[in-house]
Length: 188
Image (cartoon, rainbow, N blue to C red):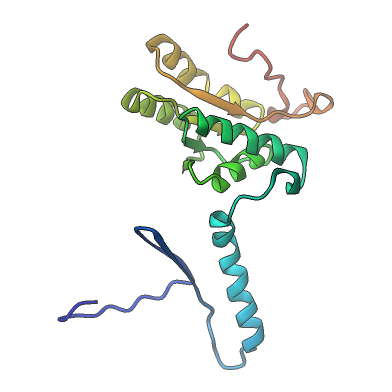
């Protein structure tokens, strides 16, 4: 908006970031026959995910399970040690780690859907920033896709952290590509 022009945009969910201020917006489509109470409730549901990302940290004892606790502790300790940039490759087994990154105010994330690309993205970040980025992937062959980047980082002395999810022992080697044994996958 200015003195000479005005533009109107509609966004169902949006966030306006300004120094020291975060404005969160959500909307609903009101049409003939809409139930105002249901639309208001829907607006609240749309905002909830964004609000949870900026909510005050929860006490550790209130976390829902041990995986969430461990992931929260790992991400917090990495941030304390200066690793604040994370590359997240979404996957079911690594969800607690991705959520922990989203909830940590010091952590920032890039989301990439290809593990090999994520590994090399992190190597590039490590080269440029001289601090490691942490890559988060799910289990099995997702981990194997990090090997080329791990080799390059090792050969060039580039800092790199790999956070890989795994299946419980009893669910390994069940025939699917995500059930391979990944312990020791990068060598002894």
